[in-house]
Length: 298
Image (cartoon, rainbow, N blue to C red; front, side, top):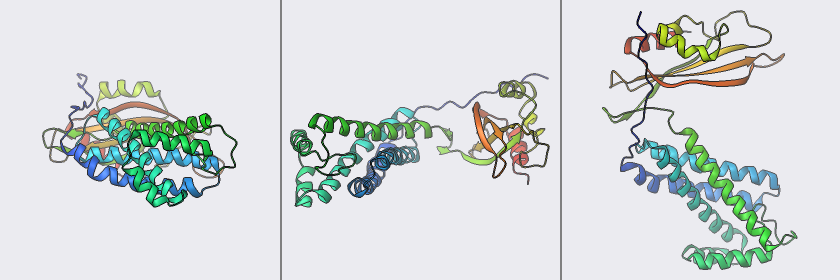
């Protein structure tokens, strides 16, 4: 039997004109809403460590919104998605400062409206005045802090970096979960996702076995949900996801990740180790349909 010529999906890297348009008209307004919520947390939350976590969550949410919006606009380029998330993060940080000013300063709404139309020089003067008053950005706890203006500026820069890096990181990780059919102009959809029991080999051998025996080799593995003996020291599973674009008959892909599962005296088993085996591996239609049937068996 000849070894099948399996290949992985490669993105075209193209960006549709709809992607930047949707980022501007959809992602930025949603990011502004997230910024308003974040400003409320920063203004009224008294716990500094919670607010630091809120900064990371705020950035991640903005990044996810930007990435999902860009993908909906048919962006197949990770660099564009990450750049869009950075722009959305910068915009959201600007909005959150305006909301905070409206909440915190005397005649805040008037000051915020004036700052909304101000240039860089006015903002630098504002931060200089704010830092001298020692109103901390991460807690903004008032003049009780004994921090120097330089320390205040450094903290604000760190806050901005946390938000921006979280946004870019979220966009980077979430890009590429689905494949795009250039023939039909549509994204793939998940047809099946399940875990297979794999306790008789190494994860490094999986791809070699598929190349030698075909994707049908996976059909011989039991589902992890099936009753079978489980080692007390843990067992290996293969998480298999099948995606396709139904109107493109040749557009069929399989993603496989390995995981080591450890039992617990009480509760569900816990995953302690993961290994990426293959991402969006092209599958022949017949083998793909057979695997989908196998994974969806109850």
